[in-house]
Length: 359
Image 1 (tube, helix red, strand yellow):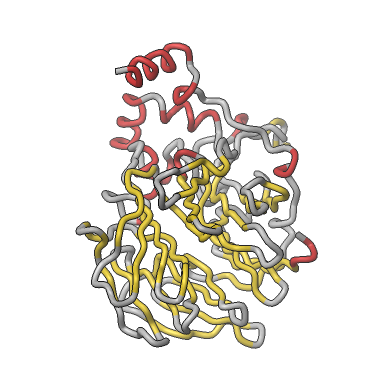
Image 2 (cartoon, helix red, strand yellow):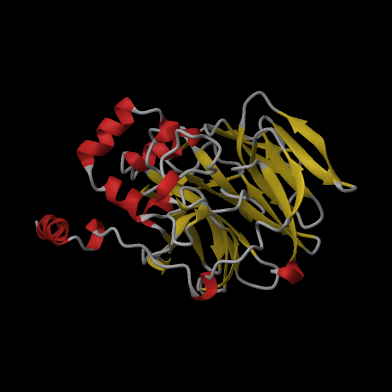
């Protein structure tokens, strides 16, 4: 009852969950051109995720796995369905999510192992995998109702059916660690606990086995996704799109949002995107972003490129950007390998290579 009254109060006063304010890009998140000016390693058909064992870089591209060898990408494996997540295993081989609905181990001691459910519920939209130990995987699922490619539908529906799970070799199905998350997208091991990106809540959560969950960092200016460890300590957190006041406003206008979803092509929704600027039918154009042909520095970004460096406590300490006038938008994966940071940006379907010394 108290929560209901608090919700009505927030809607009336425009604060709390009803607020449309967003944090500014300043301090450790001050804009730069590190992503935009990065070397383009490759442009692919349908890149989805990156993984590394410290020696080789692996790329999930459509229904195949590519490996970086001698400066070029060569095909390592091919599957019967699209790949939505990939991770390298400490005992050798790969863990691959196929079509978001099953996880298969390829190579290594447990080659051929496959899971299709966790705690009695079938997998629907697996979007990130992390090897937590030799026999344990951490896995995130964004939505129980929408497939991976319909992530924007889940946002517009105010979805909260994401979950983080663990899978152990020798067991027939996974175990839910938490459910009811607002689109879980990315996880990692941090000491004795696990961290998970709760994307629509714009925060990174610590999942504690004792049940003492805590917010690691919140009120982020973008939608957080996959997170990987940095070799010098800390983590790399991808934010695949930037938040805007207009989208925050639309999310709070139920009638408008439902009519937009029913009558408008999803490509032209007032919603975050992985890339923009290539279609005259897109929203947020013309005088909304330009004046006399010059891009406004304060224009709202429909798409954006952002990778955040976190310290071991989860505090942002630096960042890499591709700003509104750039093209390297939609950063969904970032991993370190052989002295470089490799970043997958889905807007232009590119793999970027940045020397760690430049980050």
